[in-house]
Length: 357
Image (tube, rainbow, N blue to C red):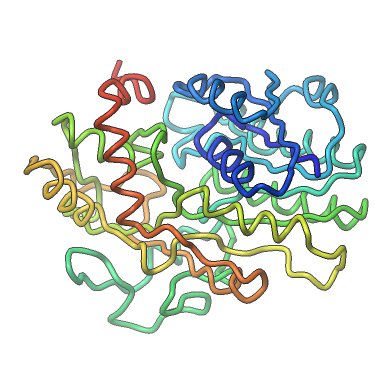
């Protein structure tokens, strides 16, 4: 089976490529990357050592995609993943749309020509901001938890389900991914292509390129270890905001099951893929872990939130378990230890992946 991965030298793409290669199923893996993300060049040598074919290409350039050899499945792991993309002054809104949505269109056209299946790595940020921000919250053990009032449909004990609203606003970033989902499903229906949408929570692990607006686990752990300034932003400035996390290599068993799925319209195409409630961690809890690992480090406070911030989002992956028999295998403590070990071995990681200017 021939598998093509977009953004293969990014954190998620490279981790998925390594995990698929390690399964020993005889996959013929190739991928392309434009190497504009700081640190992505460092993954090239290891992937080539594993026999993975790499091509320099930009998902936004249709001519680059047209030149790629045919494959059986495309995994779309190329994206600008920042919730502040297009509004932070570091990238334009047009660039965001061209990258996240235009790139998906180019890949779908490629799938149409190659008769290839398509798997989109989407995001929890397709879920509506207003109802998420309006959930009744309580603080327990230094972390927000839904409670103290009636919860809306789409939120349960394990987190947010796929039935939660996706109406605007979801941020420009979330909108590009939601539009990509819709187009992928339409291409699949119109041209009889197998398509699956995996809505990921925060992906985290060693080698992630951390910044305050993305890769928060890597950013926080590296910053804490190096005694760099850290700040709790928004929601009173106490660090109670919560996310779940997932190691991207945990996606490999799910992807293998999707590759082997029968071509039938009866399959549900959209699932949440996150660490769920067992991995849910607040910034305060993350910092407490870092204090225990590296020694105490003070954190500043800025009570005012940033645009698009929400206090809590945890993905319920139960549906993926029912359909695919999938569940996360790597616990959050192992993910944190992996990042910490990598941070200790790479003292210049912050400068490489998140230049301070």
